[in-house]
Each structure stands twice: as structure tokens, then as C-alpha cells.
Length: 113
Image (tube, rainbow, N blue to C red; front, side, top):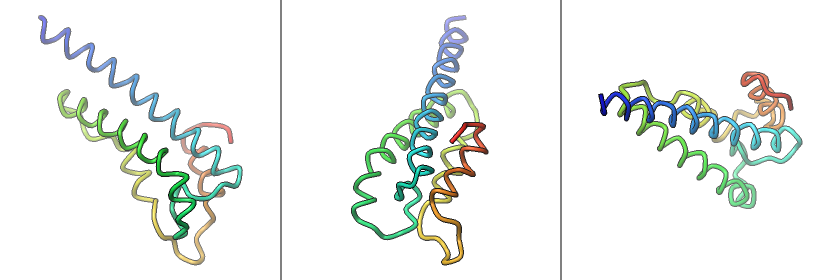
């Protein structure tokens, strides 16, 4: 019974940390949607990378904790973080800008810009 209780508490904590991750991502997306580039790292701008590095590091730290909990619980890895990290990096010349991309992500997450 103790193991079941421990797993239940871990699952509740996982949900809390996933909500914390989502809130942090939404906050970062809102800044980007307002016109501040760097979150998606589309341009090789050292200043923008330095400015967003703490945000990315915090998201990765949360995602690592979430994945560790999910692994213990026998759940799939945290897809939201994987999806976000997959769209970061250099973009094609005809790709939408970061503010527009951030607005699309906010819509996807059901958050207002």
C-alpha cells in the first residue's frame, strides 16, 4: 500500500510540475509574441541567446524532472517539451517570424497572447 501511495503522490507532483512548465512556456511565448526574438533561436544572435538562455535552462530543468517522474510512473516522455525543442533553431528564409510562431503556440496551448 505504501508504494501505491508514493506513486500517487508522485503522479500528483508530476501534474504540478507539468503545469509549472506550461505556465513558464506560456510566459516566455507571450514575451516573444510581443516582439522579443530569441526564444525559438531562429537567428544566430548572441545577445538574444544570452537573454533567453535562463528561460530555456529553466524549461529544460523542469522537463528533466517531469521525464524522470514519468519514467518512474511508466509514462511516455513529456511531449510538450519535445515538441517545443524540435521547433527551435535556424528557420527557412520563408518561415514565419518568432512573434507569429509564438502566437500560434499560444493558440495551440489555449492561452491568450
